[in-house]
Length: 162
Figure 1 (tube, rainbow, N blue to C red):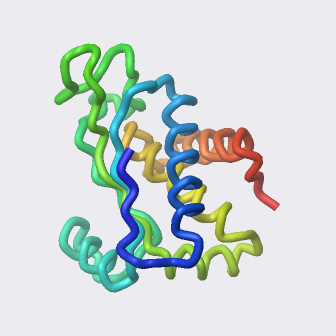
Figure 2 (figure 1 turned 30 degrees about the horizontal axis):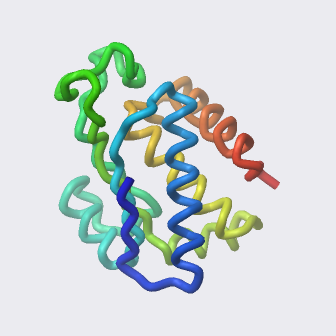
């Protein structure tokens, strides 16, 4: 798993470990054992540019996911046993995609929501990972399922909502 910090935050090694653990746990909870994910911590300016370029929204956001696999037509999460369009041959690691997180947004949201930066970064990583696996929140039902899975993964990391 590649984790790159475009910024040089205090505690960068600890942050990398946290992001890796959160991503791995989300993958494990979904039955994935051998996958590649790139996670980038960046600035509001950089994520704003990505948001404008790829989503047509000219404002910063907290997290963006860029999946390499397409979920099935029903909008269900990608099953590691069944695979997905674009999956590699069996036995090879699956490149799932990239997650980009705005560190300034994460800091602001941690303060706004009244929990620590560790929990916010883990949440954004899990959220991004689930998007790579085909989860979405475009309908109330889909959002409920995604939120439940996020909280389940975070609880398993002892990072429950306060």
